[in-house]
Image (cartoon, rainbow, N blue to C red):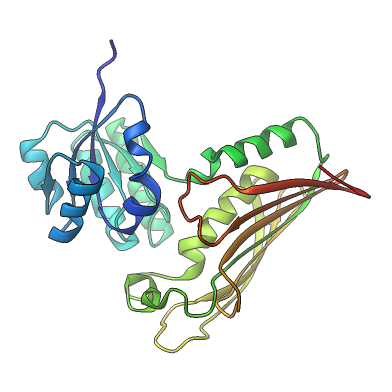
Length: 281
């Protein structure tokens, strides 16, 4: 019998609660041995709600007591480089939350450290594993909409629905926050999956709310090497419940995906349709 991978979960905050926590108990071959977070409240929540058997305020303290094979890093982006490199130096495999790091140089440092260590480094672009997204990819591979000609994405937040956004690290320049890095990274990843590598980018970023040092709105156009263009937009001036939507425009059909407010557990399937001239299925 193959032994289970012993996993330490680093960063037991929001990401654990909306993404990983609900599904970790159902992942075969994984044993979560500890949570790591500087917050006692976060560690208590991980223990009481998700059954983490132990908690530590630093990864060093965790590794001193626990046998760990791999680490899931779900901390703010400004901590990613040092944590991921430390894991490589300890011979630990890493699943790293997006965005990967603050700069290209930091990304290169992380990649090089794991290349030298011979450890596995993977980005947590979990949308590629959502069952709706997997079905969409299958349909595209089967030629259901022909060649991809364009992609439109909008991820809009309803007014001040998330007022804490500007008060936390995501709202400040020193910590490299920002709407594009936090959410746009998902959308560009999906666009690259569906339309191939990006050749060029045109972008406009705006700061439209008081207290923000980084963009809280973006409009980005990516030209892909195969010729398609993907258009990405996000605004907080959306006087409606928050919405995440993707439209993939093909030669023979359009795929329409929508993830509405109130279902922000990432295991929830998207609403998905294929549109053709005069038909919907």
